[in-house]
Image (cartoon, rainbow, N blue to C red; front, side, top):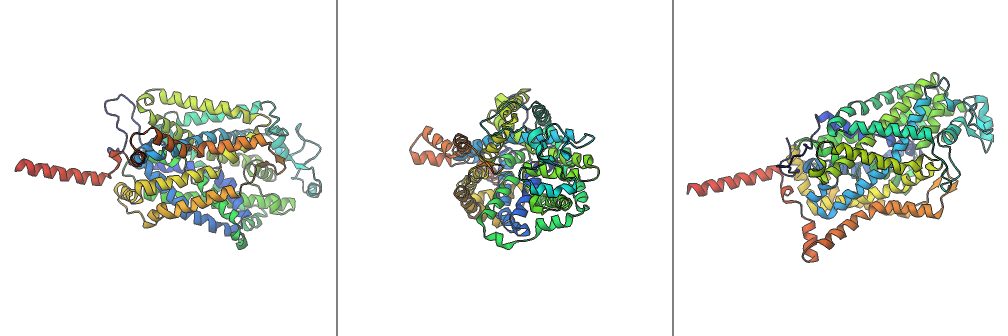
Length: 585
């Protein structure tokens, strides 16, 4: 059933159908693949260990309830009701807030440039995983230095701990073979051609996953969203069977309630929720827009949120059981081997795998899982941007071959901007984009205005009525309270704290960026944030009438989106009855 009331009207124009998911399963898998990504595997477990173990689950669950689930339901409902992309949905419900849509797409553009590089690194490691001997397992390679230490040899552990300039074989493989890292962002150096080839391969894979739109995406996610769970289960079982695994798990979950008094712990829990739930940038809106009008998005959202957070917890067991084994083998504390982000995926975990029997097998499993976790998150982001742009110009873009051409242009643009990240100084640029362009402050800002625009201007009660009309289920009153008060207040406090607690970016705890790099970073941050007030001021400036009239007009939903289906049908029936009475008299 197509939303005939609030959806786009294309009668009389020879354009291709927008389409819907082939089944409810396709929607669930696409959303699951989008929200379950790198952060579940390499960020959440480390944050849990760093911020009080099991005690970290307290602020984490607080943010799940106050921000994660309400925003998840809000954005999915927004898409399913309007049947529009991440920009045009705002034109339907609150034109004043259309800048939120543009800002979300810009952040997705930055993220496609940044995180596609992680997939290239993972593919690079996967290729080397088929070697007779893992190259990061020894110091006998041409890129190794005299300071290289083979941690797999237990008698080298003391030598490792006593040398200040020592580096593990895995660290040297990462820094000298994969990155060829230079001394700073001022020294960009030459392109790493083998890494560039891996990057091209990942862009080609992602392009063909979605080039036919929801029809191809809905089929691909059957594999990309499910197979990582198979790999995660295999790695979990293997990790828990290793010596030292129990110590790793205890280190991961052992509660330290004193950490709950640190505001930074709560900030990190909030940022983890925003990234993990993929809110604020329009991804859930676009995925929800391909649902039929009467899909039960209320129930779907609750189950998907549970799946996302559950995956994070389970991934922590898989990761820290292996780190416990690594610490046991080296005779050091788990604190000495625990890492987050690329340090976990490309140094700590590969080093641990190299110490296991059949290291190639476990390395292949890990990097296949990592690639699949990242692929569906990235191609969904590409689909979101593509859909949002096409929905802005349906008569022009929704014709045969034009979607594929636009998607190719988008991929090439991202790729060309990304070339600087595969140079010898590219890691410094990558960190800058990750820290400033795709940071939590930007998403916090968008989410604050999103809840204000929909909860206060469009109306929280109207949203509840829409959910009832679409699903037949009365939304819990808690969601209305959250959209009006709880969620925006918590997000606003977190946004302010993120600036108060700001620390300048450093690399490897020793490299300080030059002043011009920090300036570029802040430009990246405000490039998305300023789109929200900037677009609102622009629309107010070009409108007609007095300022209050323009503001009132921009706060009104489109006429075909002001009523629910049920209410519209009711009014139509009343009109027909009145007309019948008049004709009878």
